[in-house]
Length: 184
Image (cartoon, rainbow, N blue to C red; front, side, top):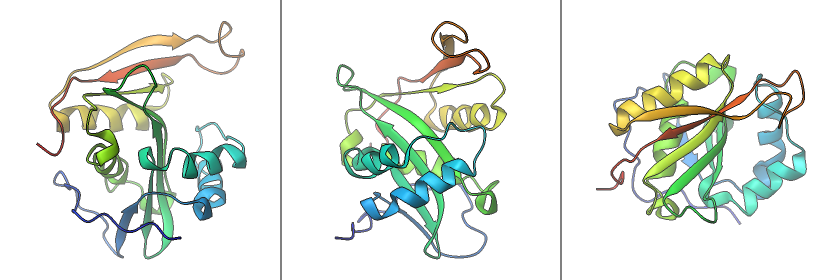
């Protein structure tokens, strides 16, 4: 069964997307899982998960994930979830944008789309983890914080050699918020 396209158009936030082609932001389905896995593998420095993990994200966590297509081709992916003990927080696991679609604000657009969904109506904070050397992610989330007119803070959270193996840089827990609901 195909998931229907959103009925209300997401706010663009002044973004020019895309230069060519038709953009579609939608809830993922099981059919997207292998393509999502391939996009992540082609998007270093993202950690590659198993195809099974991405299939679960496209099904069990579909309402807090976004697939972006341009003219029917996978161009972007955001995975997230609502932590069970934090109804006001959306945790973003990964943001991946195909090389051909980078530099057009697609990552931020997908996050804005996600925050506007009914599944995120209680969300007033967004969290994610970012390694110190992932400049693209730092820029993306700083841009989102400005768009939401919200504070952004980070603290070292998953420490290299303590929680993560040596060679995997420390992951900083980044928090944006509180912010007003995007539908208000």
